[in-house]
Image (cartoon, rainbow, N blue to C red; front, top):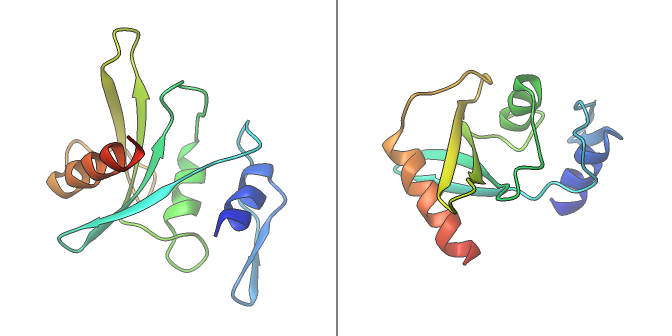
Length: 116
């Protein structure tokens, strides 16, 4: 999966099953995501504590697509404010902003703890 995400991040397109898929590039040469599950909901988590990666809604949709992307119910991007407080942006699989999700919070906590 790492090479597929690297291909995605570089904008080179990638192969999923038998269907070639092109996902819009991001302004980075590497994108590291983790996938977490809580009570039947799964989320992709991007720990971007340096606030360097900006994903467009279409990129979130492509990542969350269960047939052509990694697949997830939602996407969580974690950043760190100047006062060291972690903040998150929660998006639904369609790229729209979500207000809150308890299962997403559980996945966020797991990702942060796993990352140390």
